[in-house]
Length: 78
Image (tube, rainbow, N blue to C red; front, side, top):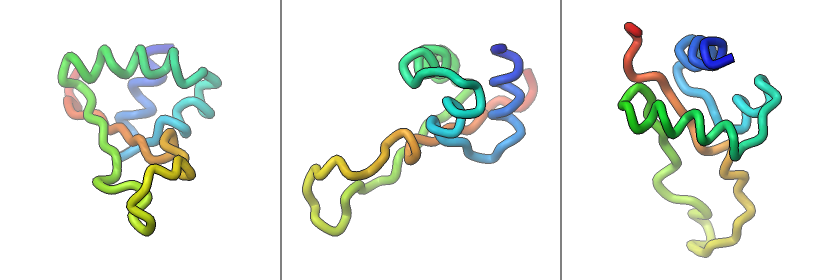
């Protein structure tokens, strides 16, 4: 399963947490645990939009952060 997840991320320029959870039928919490290990090892990078809720400048929580939280594989040779 880890190899499949790794290969999926490597084959996509940028993939959201929501997409990964759906494709691999995993809950967000457990998926983040796996991704965090790769982040700590420098194999993965994570990005969020620089500014959320840009129209109201408030923490409205209407954005689906799992759709905005994106990952890309940094180390292609592994």
